[in-house]
Image 1: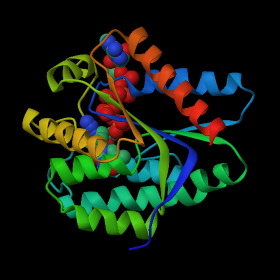
Image 2: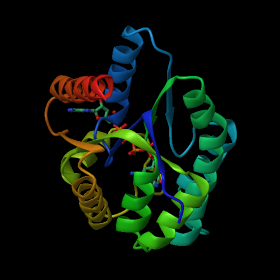
Image 3: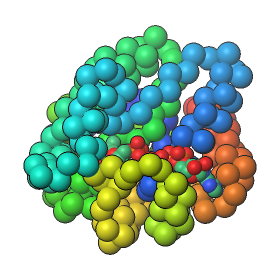
Length: 216
Ligand code: Z5A
């Protein structure tokens, strides 16, 4: 398998439902723009018009013809391949920062940990159709019950949000395992704290990362 290229200007946010990724993403984008840099904020699944249409297919709550675990994985990677080729790589090539709300780690956590798809298959797709990994990944870790309670105010849960707690517990364990296996890339943030504290911890992690890059 081809080794993944590390893109130091690609930063990703990961975590379970209601972890607060969107809130932190805006704070980090503002901090980086404060340095005068171009920042592209994006998300997965989605980030391009086609990939957003794939997102709708993935999250539609119609369970009559719900995708199998493998179909779900392939749709995640179809949307990611389009996103990487048309948004992420061009932005990195012109020197912009890319902040993505979820990236390939989500497939390892949800389709791997949550659905039980084997990791070799996911890594093969990652190597073949993504080819790069973030320089920094912030894992916003929150107990499942806390995250789900925060997300409860929404109109109607989508197909994946409708999964049982056990699914989300497996996702959380998979994320923590990924972070433990790659401590140089991951920073784990306690996302059960108040939003301002979470944003401050994320900003501090970003500062340390930028310092490390400037000294490299
Ligand atoms: N998925 C997958 O299976 N495989 C993949 O490869 C990829 C994704 C890429 C859609 O992702 C689904 O796709 C997701 C994983 C799957 N399924 N689930 N579940 P998504 O990222 O778009 O969906 P999400 O995880 O459901 O997003 P989210 O719940 O909106 O999470 P968030 O962005 O982390 O949360 P938020 O919008 O910032 O905050 C949620 C609420 O909590 C909001 O009311 C906030 O005001 C509140 N909040 C945030 N932080 C706090 C704190 N610290 N305290 C109190 N309240 C807070």
